[in-house]
Length: 148
Image 1 (cartoon, rainbow, N blue to C red):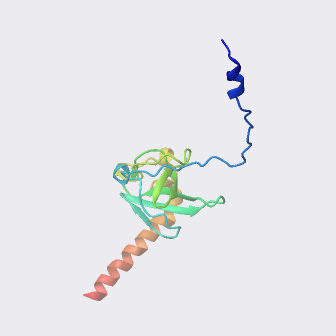
Image 2: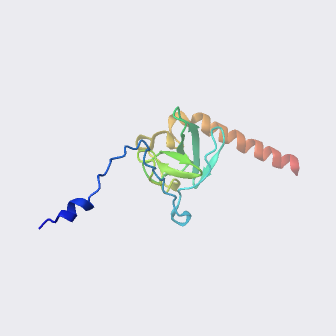
Image 3: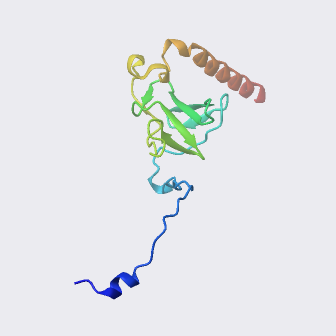
């Protein structure tokens, strides 16, 4: 049953319209779980070394740093995610930028250019890269010979 005091206790409530946007927190991953998910994000022509290759990083038109894995000779990418987003030295999945992308490294195996494209050392478009590595090796040997 309803008493007269019940109506007296009720106070009018006014709705307040807020314009503040909800704060979205970006998860901070635990460094111990980041196997193959961290490294440098220096922009090209800098060399960002990973196991069995390197990460070639460039700034996109949106301001994000995108990196593509490029494997050394006789190595192939660990998985098919070849391009990732790099923020503060942590690699993130390009399709889901809040998901940490692990295993950004190359493993010792034959690389199929039809499957992994330009990430393979033996891809036809990587001729400049192969010649550049050859030139660096020659300079290194030359420097050693002059040092002796």
